[in-house]
Length: 287
Ligand SMILES: C[S@@+](CC[C@H](N)C(=O)[O-])C[C@H]1O[C@@H](n2cnc3c(N)ncnc32)[C@H](O)[C@@H]1O
Image (cartoon, rainbow, N blue to C red):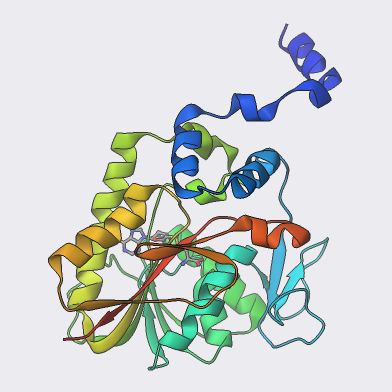
């Protein structure tokens, strides 16, 4: 019976209207963030298509596909490259210049995509993460690339810090809704209570980050999600409570600005295979 159904699906794949099968909660949230029809059409048109994978060079390359660093990942990873979505690359590529101090703490660092990119941009990264599994993957990447980095298994929310930082990256745990092309199951998991739980942790992490941020220091908040609870609302809640924070504008032709942060616009990467959707906000402690 199951085989017969699958065979029938395979015979009729070109007749299936995927847009009609998008989980309503997922569509509602996406439509809220991307008010432009052309962006929505692009996203819905590519929702069920296997995405291209990218690899990023740790060195500047003149012949790269994008940003002097990005290549398509075909069969093999090139020497000195690591795998990362182009949206992930764009986030760090467009915010790293805000950090005046190149000694940076990445408080949710594993498996290391952003830390490695920052390292290759000249940052001295202290990386922490609470998951040993993820740290192991991070270490494998580092040893393949022959990079030395300070990684510690620490629960950021429990750790008592005896110093403050000028440069903090918080790439917070989230629903991963923005990675729907790689993880199609997230499209059916847009559950309000679950996402509220993520939001609670994200706010706790923001509070903790601000506690250890020096005056005139920069905190970058990132999530691979476009759910308002995990993005705009987190920043709103933080801004309402902390009057000593300034939000900065990001210069990137590849993102869409909302009131307090930016979403990667995958349509801007259409010609090279699209991208995952990230949210990023740059905060400075001014007092
Ligand atoms: C979005 S992933 C980070 C991805 C990473 N920055 C990168 O670019 O490859 C979120 C990470 O936060 C970690 N995490 C979750 N809760 C944490 C906590 N309380 N303290 C430290 N790390 C935590 C998870 O183990 C996970 O590796």
